[in-house]
Image (cartoon, rainbow, N blue to C red):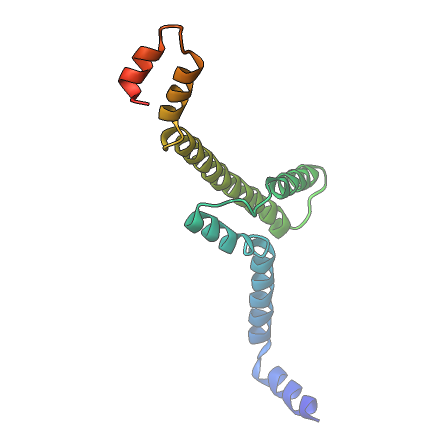
Amino acid sequence: MLRDIILPMMEADGWEWLVTAVQQLISWGASAAMMFGGVVPYIPQYRDIKRTQNAEGFSNYVCLVLLIANILRILFWFGRHFESPLLLQSIIMIATMLLMLKLCTEVRVANELNIKRRSFSGSDGFHQVMCDLQIQNVGIGYDHHIHTYFRC
């Protein structure tokens, strides 16, 4: 019943432009969601890794698989064109995965360097190594120099 009232009004008043505009807006919104929807889950992960400087929970293999899949999709596009939003989604995902890999690599390298510095500079570090060397080299003549410099 309501349909019988609204449809003649839309036709009579020329509401077709509004319906077309709404359909176009929905189409653009769906395309944008398709292009950026795959990136959204990585935003909190990126922020968390950057904030905590810890990338242990993130797998580089996931990035590898997604990079390969999106590169193959782009290569397939050259042979048989498909919708542009899907092509743009692949480009955006490749950029996202490269950013994630860059961040994870930087964080892991920085953490490994900090661990190596801590293990070499603490009370069990270089000083202890030199004192242990003195104990092993007793009678060779180097122990006096080690003892003098490191006070074991």
